[in-house]
Amino acid sequence: MNKNEIISKAAQLGFEYEKKYHGCSQCTVAAVQDALGIRNDLVFKAAGGLVAGIGRLCDGVCGGYSGGVIVMSMFFSRARSKFDNDREMKNTSYKMACLLHKLFDQKYGSVICREIHMELFGRTFDFCNPKDIEIFENMGAHKDKCTGVVRDASKWATSIILDEMEERGLTLLDFKHLEYIEK
Image 1 (spheres, rainbow, N blue to C red):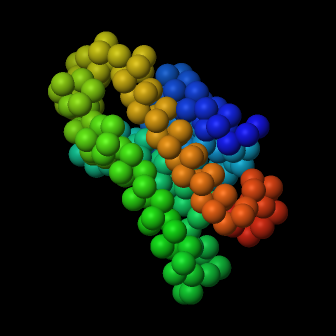
Image 2: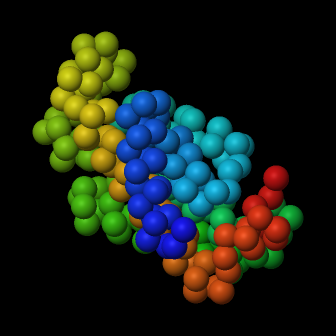
Image 3: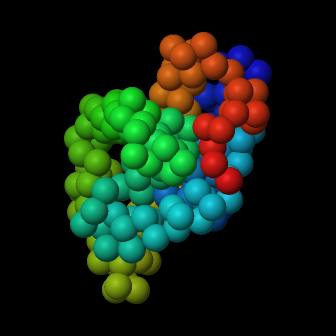
């Protein structure tokens, strides 16, 4: 697949995974990993508690955003084996997170879950209240609202990863053979 096809696949998978499985952060991670063909189940698992603004509280960053940052960092961030001396890769992960943040701000006006909910639904939700969960679903959360956010997060994170690879002269095969992704 070429770059545009991979990005399109990530977007499609992000939408489908959020619609079917829910859990914006893990759906974003899975979509990007599956589109790129490089899976790390520990990274996927680590994204679990970040759903809906962390812990479904909606007062933190969007799970699509945090999932995107996690999966981008899976490819480009400081490795544990270089904990004390890899400022360049650490700074790369910061740069990538800022790029994703900018895209969220441009489209949704924020990376904060409840602010994105205000943009999409015109209201916020209390996921501790079963009635609010029902309203959330009835308003299209997993039909076209949060599914669209995860689609965008997956698309943007994949694009940022591929751009960074291109800038460094790397391919996806390099990540299957090099130490970029620690097991």
